[in-house]
Length: 150
Image (cartoon, rainbow, N blue to C red; front, top):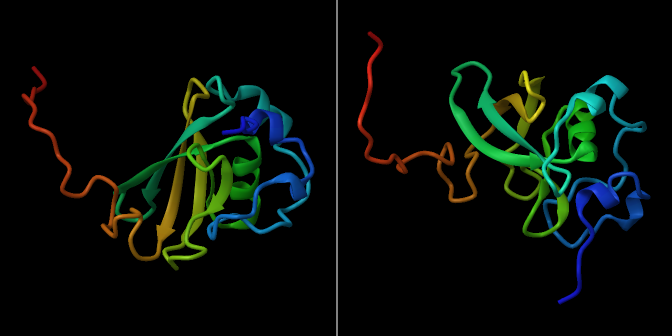
């Protein structure tokens, strides 16, 4: 198996070098330009150059899923109105809903206080989870001891 470049290595590269084998790959022509300098400087990426993106339904506040973004995926999300992720397993970009029709329409994007997580508020069309459930958390609750405020 050959080594794949990390998103940090491909983020500034020519778009034609981004793999296009996945049906959910983002289109070959994203909006032009990099992330705003203040956003790029504030982001704290993991070793692979990624930041966690929590996706939330804008009107109900349901937490729908967690995805990963590098600078290019965030740029595409901020400039196209559709959510784009970087797939850690496939090592390529994918735009949510391109094959399933379960599109995420961007309503807002916020960075947390540490710059190591994003909150992407969307209008979700259909299921957010690849398993077909509304959220990636439906039916997956764990048994916990609950606490309460004093």
